[in-house]
Image (cartoon, rainbow, N blue to C red; front, side):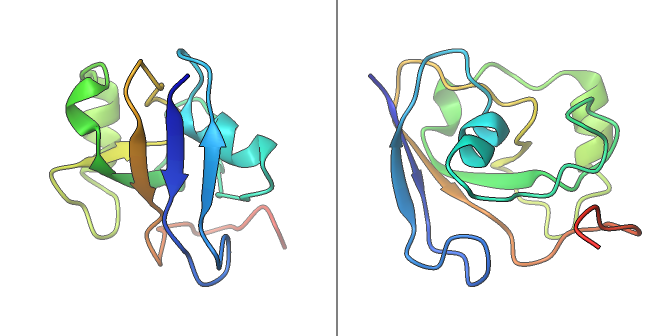
Length: 112
């Protein structure tokens, strides 16, 4: 069973977290199921960048992003070559190390 290792994030996951994941689950769903409240303003429909993550290890094991995700990622704060949208990136058979960026581009926060 692959693991998703969330690196520490000051607000969302201060101590980091290691989670057993099922292949096919999105990184965002795994986070939310484990009380890591990554924003997702478009309700997981690939229409914003609030669930932007950076896959520090295991990136090549993910299915390639499609054109819509790439277009959305172009708008993300702090874009890196290993950036993905958490709602679109699904765990495969390999462990992943995930960093949640400190900032997000979100005009309206769902938590307010």
